[in-house]
Figure (cartoon, one colour):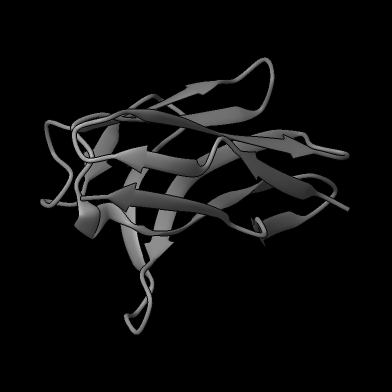
Length: 118
């Protein structure tokens, strides 16, 4: 069984920074894609940033230049550094991880709340 746990959310003022972490644990052979999503109140869940096993990244247009996704393969951990935060970044942020243990896994974290005050 593979699990992922997010941490690092909280309350921050406009213009501030936060760093989210997501650690995958369990019987893991390979972690392929690691991704951050977010869901704001009354809105659909959206992809924020994705990082592949080769380190290639992609970002939503709304966060380009402000957010940076990175990973530590030795720790099966993905990070999201969020700078210049805006009130519209307020959401529950979810980690999504795909890879292989004895079989393919596709797991979501429980989410961590980020609130940006104006």
